Length: 157
Image (cartoon, rainbow, N blue to C red):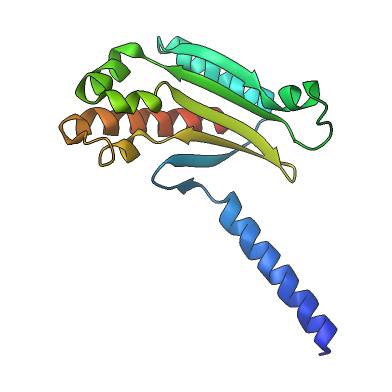
């Protein structure tokens, strides 16, 4: 096999490995990401409806692609939308414990498209336990995180 062929196959292998890692469902300390089977708009519409059906509040919805286009940045950003949402009955309990966690609240979710694939990412509340000293609210953080995971998995499938 020639050197050019080896380089080509190695490049393809690296690309496929990166795509596999990127498209897998991920859950790191701060963000939960899944692939969506729907368009960006439809995914966010589904999420908004689910949040409202569960008595949550949508504080804002931002079409980030449109915002970029509005300032002259055209054809650089794929479809991307962000929502800010939450339930003050839950989030307030955390802020009473440590006001600094208010920088994390309300929750956020972003749906974005890259290389023809739609992803949905959301805040992971369990990541706040240590940095905000919220050990006494561990059960609330776990419940919030479980709800976020269930929600994004349901709206993306």
